[in-house]
Image (cartoon, rainbow, N blue to C red):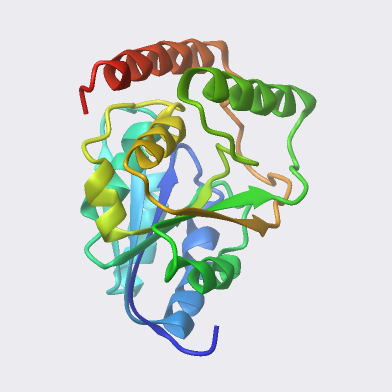
Length: 237
């Protein structure tokens, strides 16, 4: 990337990430200043029960371009993403998960692709998760192909970029849980949006606990997926 983009909204979803929130946001600020003429960072606190919100507020005090949206109680990953997508004010919107497993400076790769695409989604070169998460990822790919007829390398990779116009075409989003990425891609495919994939680095989680393999999360995702399939089948979106 040789020149700055005119404007960029960045958001990060957090749930009980008190040891990650400050580093994730602070590391993104110099990147935003380098790549965008106008920018904002939105911290989405999804009803954390630890000091995530408190630590986020300290970051906001020192940075006028950073703001917070908070949920209470916790609603789920999908709800956090919906908040970020719907509250972003600029024409390009990017996010990574708030667990510190991505390097936001790799957003350059997305910017290089976004001009000729509606959405750019990351795929992890080497996924730094446990065996169960790898199994679930492959199950999700098969599930989504059967029900929604699309295939991407890494559906639930938490590093994506959107044109604001693409977000407007897939809204409103319904999923509140982990199936949000499937809903985004299923609706995007239905709307004939142009989607590109770029390789990103995935790092081991240093702090906090993963919840994607939690049984309750999986059951909720299956139910949301079936509702989404029924809605799409009957043209309800």
